[in-house]
Picture 1 (cartoon, each protein chain N blue to C red):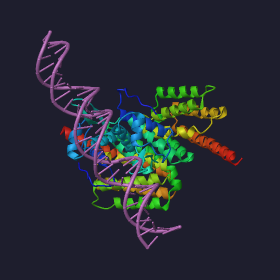
Picture 2: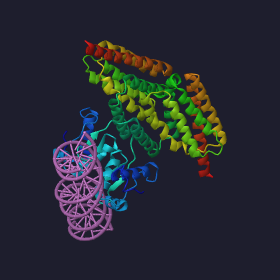
Picture 3: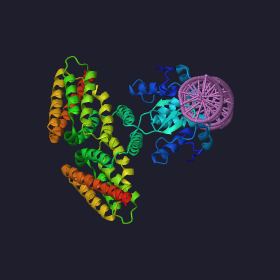
Picture 4: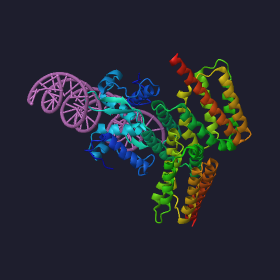
Length: 246
Length: 246
DNA sequence: AATTTTCATTTGTCATACAATTAAAAGTCT
DNA sequence: AGACTTTTAATTGTATGACAAATGAAAATT
């Protein structure tokens, strides 16, 4: 692992982080392996300990290493967990959508397309637990006086159960970002009692079709749900437009 | 933004990073807004400048801020680009798969399921450019003496073109991880001339069906490709098993 | 043999200093 | 007055040294 101290395009700590990251991704450093101590690294790279520390903090932020204090402590290559990966994906996806002004349509299309991809597997593999979770969320959604925030949270929980029913952790991980990152966009919509009723109807259908292992029908219903959600968004945008003009 | 100096569960720099990150994600800090200088932050949080710097490097590693030297420089909230988001997703996905010993089947299933989700949109929206890229990669794949590495790289390029044809940047971003993270797993497979021929045949079909805007057929062919890829992986695993026993 | 103490190692935090960079402000020349 | 150059102040990047806190191994003690 080498760095170029005269490269003006990036900081030393960024270069060091990259060198170590590359070694991890390429498999040269394996899980639970200990990196040299901060002093040793500063000798090897010929930089100060502060610079090494900044590099290590960069890696820690990406869940690539964990550190432990004390004798026989140090920085260890970390086995990244699904939970951490979810978290990172959600943060990145959320910011990507909010900062780049991704249109509701584009985000909605991506989300429901990927959810539809889960349907065949979910229909095949769903357990009683998954169905119970979905029905419990539907029940919650039907409560009168539920705040928009709680409604959206329950909506996310329902869809996560659908995705998890496919029992493919990689898919669950990939979709976590899609579903959760939509929440801020969904929050812009005001869900009237009538809107909610329609959505609950579609949710119920999805649960029933999953129960009957009818994948195709689940997909059809997801398309309807996607279309209906888009319609609601259009109405919100139209109303805002009118308000601006009036 | 407040931190708890006596919280033994996490470092001060991690707490500070979290406080700022939360402010960014929740929209309290907007794109291109300047954070206080390192000295000001160290005053506000009542920690040393080094600790603040470590926190800022954590945020920089997640592409949440960029820094600029000199007068009127500082740390600015960064608009995360699709490219950076791709990069992060690929790093995380790759490590998630390699470190958690995700089976080839699970990864393959997730990847092709999500690719299939793109098919309807790709068939509708593909341009001449997308088709040209796909056919160019097919041509490259047919070259005799192509190394396994180059073959896999071309395979990735082909599938990226397919995903990009859907013209939904959010989907492209989500799928980048799926497709690229599979590469190390794919590299374990030795692609014989005969294997390649079969795959090229399926790739050609996909390109043709896309050309004809026949979404259903694209999906069918993707299923065949998925099944064939799984078969190849089984053979590799079986061969290794035999080697171990013999 | 079990418990306690000591000790060396390592990360976490702080303080200070200086280099490098940068844009604004001030100064200079035509 | 306007274009160009120099100065200046602010800010991040890097280095150094110091000490606190944690921690597991080794030594000492009971």
